[in-house]
Each structure stands twice: as structure tokens, then as C-alpha cells.
Amino acid sequence: MLFFDYHSTTPVEPGVAEKVLLYMTKEFGNASSTEHAIGDAAEDAVKEAKSHIANLVGASPRDIIFTSGSTESINLAIQGTVQHLENKDIHPRIALSAVEHKAVLDTCLALEEQGRVKLSILPVDTQARIDLAQLEQACASGIHLLCVMAANNEVGTIYPVKKIAHIAQTYNVPFLCDASQAVGKVPIHFKEWGITMLSLSAHKFYGPQGVGALVVKRGHPLEPLLYGGGHQRGLRSGTLNLPGIVGLGEACRLRKLEMEEDERAIREKRDRLQKLLTDKIPGLVVNGDQENRLAGNLHISIPGIPNSAVIARVRLKLAISTGSACSSGVEAPSHVLRAMNRDEDIVEGSLRIGLGKFTTDAEVVAAAEILSQTVHAVRAAMAV
Image 1 (tube, rainbow, N blue to C red):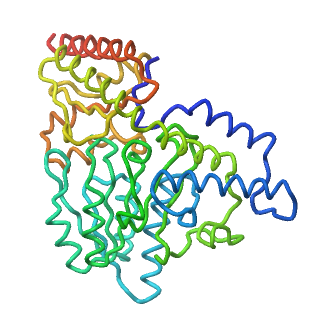
Image 2: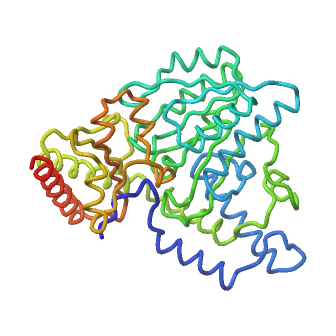
Image 3: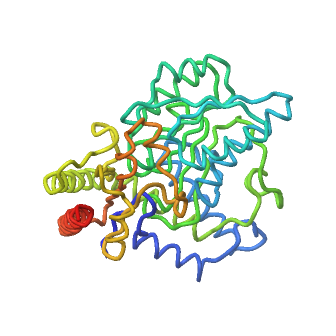
């Protein structure tokens, strides 16, 4: 089985897995149990993990709130901000791009349906790029929160976060950046760029599943979603997931050291796979901004060939997807491609291919052969 679904999740680095196991079996203390040395050691491990995370994204350790992953982080950021504004009798207005992850879109839409917020949806062009002039107009109109991702989880388009943060700062608008697909792959400078809140998940960059963080600028007011023991400054109660947090920290430490070289090698493999597929499959279309996308992203469409027909034939040999893993099981066309105003045959024939640091040259060649043979077989069957 060839794994080409790195956008959905990544294998855990062996060194990360070793640390996770250590903190599950031997160094298993509760970081809040500071009455004894075992608890103290756990607390020290959490502090070290915070330091590694902060170093990777250019933040301060005190800015970090641990969560179960980006979905929780995003909900805490959006709902926590909205609740604070409501407590001040303000009816919040939120602007967000049309291609945000469902964690952002669905949270905002749910709040709108409840009558709690007013939304402004920022359109994108055919390559999923956002118009900064329109974004500035939205900020100037008096919004209370701006949500724009760092990199798109389907087509891989990378957004100018530094410029977006500067615009938001100019109009004193809090800026939430979903950086789930970008952290560990492209440079992020939280404090220097002036980002207000940033979400990340360990399993997107070779860490364990089920752990992530929300980085929050000091002074930005939030109301908690969870109540309990008052952990993490009262913003996220609950016993800390020590093994997961240690794994997240170690993954961040390794990304800081290896990201530049790894992403260069991944980009070379992606480009080779793209060329092989383009040569082997007539009519293939590459979606997204090819000049400014994640190194491991290859989002293609094969007009006239339903993506379900391809997936059904390769699913036991090749792990690829039709879109976001968080939408799996939901029979609906990609909202990202729809927002890009792509033709229906492009939407219905789309496939998301993700490469990572463990992808080999031999796997690239094998994946290209499997996909091309499958497409030819589907075309032949449809022609009968």
C-alpha cells in the first residue's frame, strides 16, 4: 500500500514515537501534580515542549494553549472571541475566506445560524488566491475577527500571512490563522508578523494524532469552552495530554532543524510525479497556484472521470483522497473547487495527492503507474 495522503495525516517520526512511549510508560506524571518530583518532571516536560513549539512558529511559550488539535483550537479561538464580545453587548462580525477548512467554516456558519454573528465571505480566484484589496475593505468595514488560513488543505495554495496580518493590525482586527497545513512546512513568525491566534495539529507534521495547540497573542481576550480545574490559565481545563504534548514538542524541534531540506526534497518528488502523470494522462488538470503551493501538494482533476471511480479501483493499492479528511463520508463536492469557480467536470474529477518526507522515488514512479493505468481502464470501461 502506497501512502500519498500526507495532508490528512503523517507517519510519526521514529524519534517522536520513542518520546511518546517514554512518557506513556516511565515518565507518566500529571503536570498539575506539583506536590512531588514525578509531577515536577511532567511539568518540566510540558515547559520544554512549549519552548520547541514557540521556537518553530516564532511565539513565546506563554502564548501556547494545548488542545486536542486544530479543530478544538479553532473553536476555542472563534467561539471564545465571540462570547467575549457578546459579554460586552457587541454583535460580532466575522470575515473569512471562502476556502477555509470546515472547522472554520462550519463553526462560523453555526454561529450565524444561531443569530450570534454576521459573516462576510471573502471570495478567491481560480487558483484559490485571495484578493488583498477586498480583504482590506472587509477589515476597514469594522469587523471583529478575520479568519484566513496559512495554506489550503486541498489545493495547497499558500497565503501571504505576513501581509494579511499587517492589514488586520492596521484596522485593529484580531486575526485567526489556521496554520494546520503550514506549520513545519513553511516559515511562520507569529509575533513578528502580528498574528493574533494560530492553530496547529501535531499529526500534520510527523507528530502524534489527537494533540495540537492554539497560540494566542498576549492580551487577546477569550472565553473558555471547557470548565473544570482551571488549567492553562482557565482557557482549557483538563489534565494535560503529557505523551501527546511531548510528541508535539519533539516534532516541532525536528521540523525546525529539518524543514528546509525536507521540503526541498519533497518538492522535487512532487514535481516529478506531476510530470509523470501529465505525460501519462491526457487532459489532466492541476488545480491551485502552482507557483505558490505546499511542496507536498498535488491536486489534480481528470475531466470526464469521476473521482469515485478512481478511488474505488486504487483504494487497496494507493492511499489518495478526494478532499479534506474531515469531510470524509460526506458525499458533497469540494467547497474549495466550487469557490474557485471550477467547471463541474473539474470538481467531480478531482483527486488530492499528498507527499511527505518518507515518500520515496520508487513510490512516486509506482503511484504514477497505478493512477495512469486506472484512468485508462476507467476510460475504456466508460467507452463501452
